[in-house]
Image: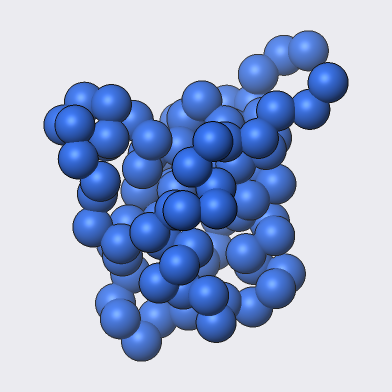
Length: 86
């Protein structure tokens, strides 16, 4: 049974960066909204810790993007995020 983040459709990041390339957006969604890193989404952890949304410029990986920045290279392993076994 596949899981999906309950906030995916209302995520401020994906709403703000709706012009992000389809390939990049799908890569992030597959990892952080539906995939192995779902419980490690920095936006989700920020909301749980602070009770409010992170800035829309914060990616699920925790990178803060400039308003005109649309490239989001994946550095999951570099920041210590590991895929769950299973």
